[in-house]
Image (cartoon, rainbow, N blue to C red):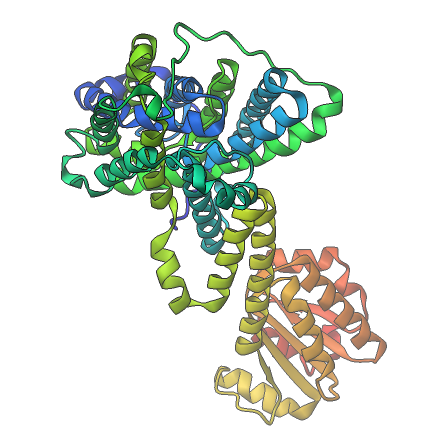
Length: 565
């Protein structure tokens, strides 16, 4: 994974919002490519938006209005010029679970209103993430965790299509669907399975080089729907009429008693949407050779999701498939995302009667392909050859995502990854640290330092540390010092330490306290002014016999000088 440039390196007045005239000139300069990219991307987004809407439980129209609102708002306000936003597989999976939970708790009407309230709050949280400049941190999690939950979401998308492809009316969580599926199999609809399989085959085996002329999802939608019209209308479950006209505003409905429930779901949606968008921004950077603004992207996505929630649209994020399609078709500026939304608006307002004829199995076949594309097959194949720890963590997060919930999966995955990282850092410190006295191999020291240490004999111990000293390394540091033989003076060399954590500073403080009580001296060689200031704030030099030195050589030269204390 690539790392994003810190926004703190940019002038404060340009961190989020450049001047509008510059934006307009940059957008209009590529208007032909942006028009082509926007129209092409809308063709790709149309069947996906309807399919995501049906899967969420809010209806196809919710997916369409989500794509329209996000396209109009997130494109000009976001920080990735070529990115196209809309409902995505990961966001739809989470929103589907939120809608199901709210409807079961409050009923159909009020539950759906509460679900869109959650989406509105999630959008506001994304704006807050951007204003707090958290974009540079959100995607900095281990790839094994990201791969695990993205693959888990892909598995969820695939499993959610099984009832649709079989023509069965099954809903609820994945465990509930899997438990009820065997008993429902005798009532499966063979025609639905045939139509779904045909749709999947068209999308999967369609030549990729032709996607820029006629996207595979649209071809499958039109072609297989046309084939299905040869069958009796009642032979297949169909999409049915979608509402016409502009949507009514959905004002938030929130009671103080629901704050905890809404807040938990909203945080889940906001964090996932932020990760999903910023990962797509990295993809856009790689193919356009540009640099996105992560914090501005979060603000734009948040406002876009708030707008989508107010019109009853699904929340979404930067969509990788649509963004890549946009760039390949010539889109380079936010104008392409707005054109994509305008085309979808025109289609939504005028093509409702035609959409009613679409079989649900066609949408299921399209989403089956989407789910399989979300699964990180490349890492699944290579991880066992790289590290068993990464493989185990990835599968744990994947299974927790599918059979538990995303938040639990990510929290547990990140926690385990952090523990493993801390252990690895401690092991690295153990390998690179050197404890030397006058009788050891001193080849790592300069000739002058060797002479001084040999002159001191066994009464002086030099402990040279290298790498980060985090709280994971503090235990080894304490053990290393306690295992040392009797000495009169300890030279603690921090010259090669790249990070000095609070817990490691406390371990050094405890070491100096114990050494002072035993009448021993401690000379701390710390060329870094920040390390000396941190240890001084801890009061390390308050103990008798403890002092700071500017280098290892300086400390060794002070060994024989009582005044150095």
